[in-house]
Image 1 (cartoon, rainbow, N blue to C red):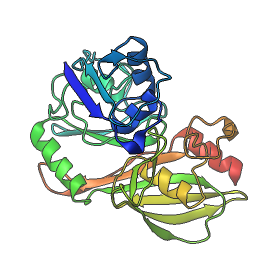
Image 2 (cartoon, rainbow, N blue to C red):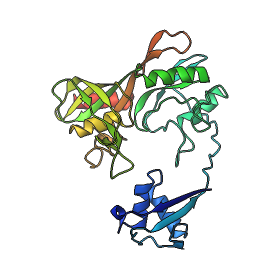
Image 3 (tube, rainbow, N blue to C red):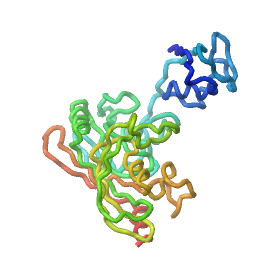
Image 4 (cartoon, one colour):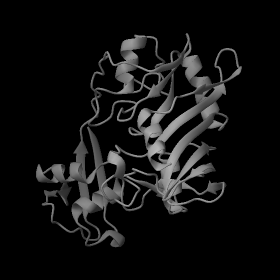
Length: 303
């Protein structure tokens, strides 16, 4: 077990114990901390406290966390839209609603479950048992190209290209409002200071993030864009466009929060073009993921 110990400073005085701990440990959710408190697992000065307890300066907080147990990830016979495959890599056109790799609440039905069935043991092990073969990911409700690697050598070479920002990643997106001309967004993206489920433009703690956007078509209340990533931060396109006042159509997390129009399931974002140097031949190649039916149908409605 891992033991956590904290001495409370004046800056945190009078905060509720659960909120205080979420500020001190951003890897734990508030609901998990509340569960520990309810089970008398959090001690203040050696005594268990209730969730309503407000901390005082020089309080000594301690608790134990059991070591994480990684569940067995099972192969599942889930159909894959394979765009390219050889002995080194496989590129899949991921559908909307599919999570790339297992995580809390999503241990089945993921792209990894499907890849384990299709590829068997021939996936790189660098990502561990939860992310075999996975070098990068796209959001659950984002569609399009995802590359997975079948051996560690290929994994390392693709990961290096991602690190040096030499991989081509062009997305198609529909955003709210009218964008009149092309542009570049160069704003750091990091964890949202108040909502740990979200990312945000964060000048203090964010990492440099650059998105190039090109206007493809303008509609009455929306704009059809091609966005190219120079960097690849979590939720980068979604955060950048929302921050400039043009959130993606259907984005429940960064949008206006109303009921999603057009019966959408999440943001209208598609990873269309993926370009890279092949890990064995070093030749540049591009894969083009066909647009999903919901996206092309939506463009027809808006036109």
